Image (cartoon, rainbow over all chains, first blue to last red; front, top):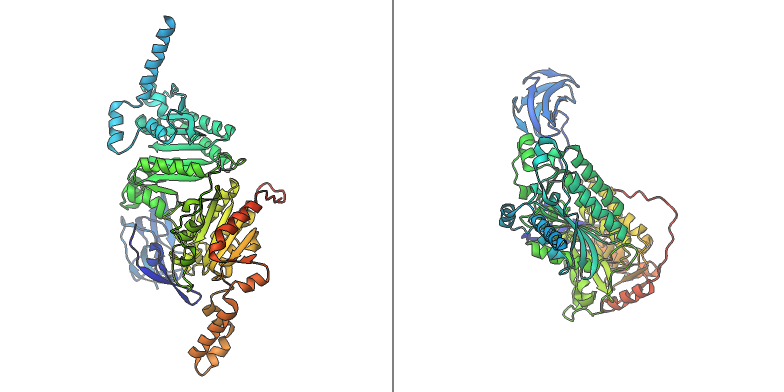
Length: 104
Length: 514
């Protein structure tokens, strides 16, 4: 049995003294999506990065090619702007949700 | 003397088959802390009751050198026997024979015993210990799995189906256990996953051990795929036998009735539940305080602990208990606890087992992750399961029953036959703090001393609404009872419901939110 300290859970402004599940205690606060971030929607390997830092891009441009589940997936920009950062290099293995390229 | 010779021949043939994959393979199996397929069957069934069929079945695959391979009994043992005198059908994959891999004849044996179980309306026990599909037999292996899944589904709700994972159970193979009613796992022995650590490493570069990915503990605590956890095969076998003692052999008969034994006197029902609705306690104590012999057989003990489910007996008859657990996550309904309760309610309904519900919950778990994980559709499963269940439904509201949680937990409105409330019950649209802050928002915010006014208003609300009498005045609660009257009233309620008959409108089947 795991050791879990007695915690508090608030429902409708009332604090209940109770044990908290591990998944609840370790939950991450919600972060709204940032449209300029090109993230891996699935774990995979970066094949090619089609932009460099400082480049201007338009909405719908291909930014990264990600090899995942036997497919070469084209990740497109959701916004028009400038490439502020390229966080990965071809050949990098990335987890789901990793920020590959940032556009502002 | 020709007959004697033939009999001797038969004995020799049998002996050869009984050795399975041979002594070396058996040695390896033992070294892993595992019993052989036939030993496992014998351990579950009553002594001397096992009869094996299809012992001499062999594959006739030709490709990849299979024509030269001899696989005794094709790697699976099937038969019938009894558990506590109740007939059961059973199969056990034999890991010592080609890793228990599933080929065409292997699957034919399994489907044969499944058909038998369904036709005879007796429970099916399946012991899984297999490396997966026998790749050399190609699409025939896939056909085998599909035919097993089909039978699992057709038999669902007609005969009890029990899966025991005593080794690897990987890839498509996992879906047979997933379609059955109860899954038993053993620490360090059971391994279940769709894609194994190797594939995950090659494709995703993530390293994880088999145990951390799909071990017994993971499936009992995290995924909820398994229902019963044990530390050894022997412990697992006694759990299986105990389960069988509670459930009926098919959906047209009742579970075996035992002698009526009162709860143990050490459970003092008046002292279990604290009066302050924000304080925790173990609701299983309440269950033990009312159940025959204080005997409660909990299911999925380690998963979604905020909801407690399991079997017990009242007046010698099997009942299913469903209870919020205030000690864990305040007993809230959330994605996992809803799923857990709903499936159990449907199990009880399918097998004519009355449902006893103990209510004490503040409502649904608030949070973005819950909303995004679909607490709406998962929560709806509880409403659906209680509403469609036609078995006797008896509810006892112990303490809090707020808002949507009140409705969901087998309320009168969802068709409960009897609803009792303890004097500590608070049946209200929400907790006093939340309600007072909404109803008296203006008074509170415009007051010179808002905290003082808030306290007053909360007290006022508590006084008026945090009790069972408002609901009782509408007949939503049948009786407000003393805790010590609970067992007597439940026994009476079950007696009165013995011939309960509810006619549902004709339908092919409903469309539950799963």
